[in-house]
Image 1 (cartoon, rainbow, N blue to C red):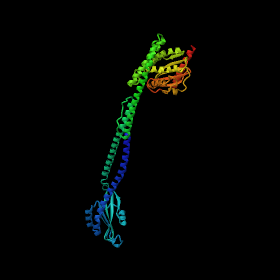
Image 2 (cartoon, rainbow, N blue to C red):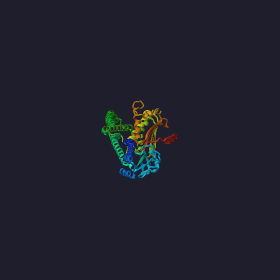
Image 3 (cartoon, rainbow, N blue to C red):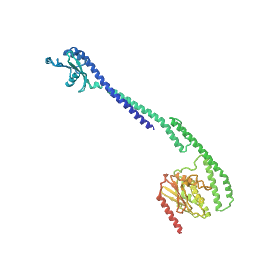
Image 4 (spheres, rainbow, N blue to C red):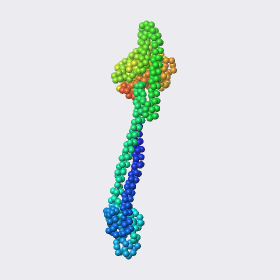
Length: 472
């Protein structure tokens, strides 16, 4: 905006300067020419009275010398009787005083017309002024006007005009630049404040200054920031309150789990209750401290996805055996490092596997496949259920399936975890006949490309393994 104002001001001022300076320069040149020829007319007028009285050469030379000089003035007197054509014209010839520069034709034309005229000669111009003599003939006074006298002062005047025009242009550019700074600085502060607020610095505010429009924008931004802070505070309080309400049923579950006695199922139940209590405590502390529940993993951070997959499948396998579900894990036999916190990946796997147990009938088989690529890690959770009729609706936050216990937040948790690495989540059909959820975790932070060929290769490898297990 600043440079745009400067360019507009430069263009407008330059056009104004040219529109006024060029005609004014031409007028100054014409005035200098008129001044030079006016002086020449006065010199010629000084000789006219003497010519009307006498045509004596010596007297006229003295008059010419006093009026001008032989180098700048000349007098051309025709021969006596030339005007009437009498025979006396042969008794004497024409008289020329001074240096003649104009041609005989120009002098004859002025004598015939009877009015003053100018003629171009080498180095300048001449003024030819006719004067009537007492004898009736017409004498011509020639005054030489050199080019230097015609242009005297024109160059200085043009230089002054150019200096004034340049000063006007520089001044207008400086004023436009100051106005641009006055407009741009509040706009930049508004942009910086928006970036700070977007980065989580909720105390970012913008000073109310500058033009009226930017002042109103700053007031609106500060009001919006205050509302955002208030909304976040209300949301944190609500999350903390809702999480705190879970303590009472958790206490009952913990007491009931303690009375189950010994056995694998009892131990798993008590471990699940303890983990649930820890998650609730984490939610409450995070909400009260106004800190994000998860943060992007820094260099060297993350977890072993294969270890997390084995751990969570160890947990869900007990429930799968109780419900008669066949399950399979592939690709988790060697370490697979990903830039995701262990708790985030575990929560995402629990959400996906929980959906399998919640939305498919007992006895429905499921599988978890882990594929390690050069720039991404893919986690596939598939089942042999009835599938999802509307995958887009399933990915929408807060919709759920409409059944009890379905809030639609599970897949959103998975999606946010994947997108934090530059990946994504896709829902499709699995080779088992049901639903397949593909979790793409980007390793280098770039946006995950659509790799149809890679996905097809993954499916072919899975199908080959499934067929091999069916033969066994």
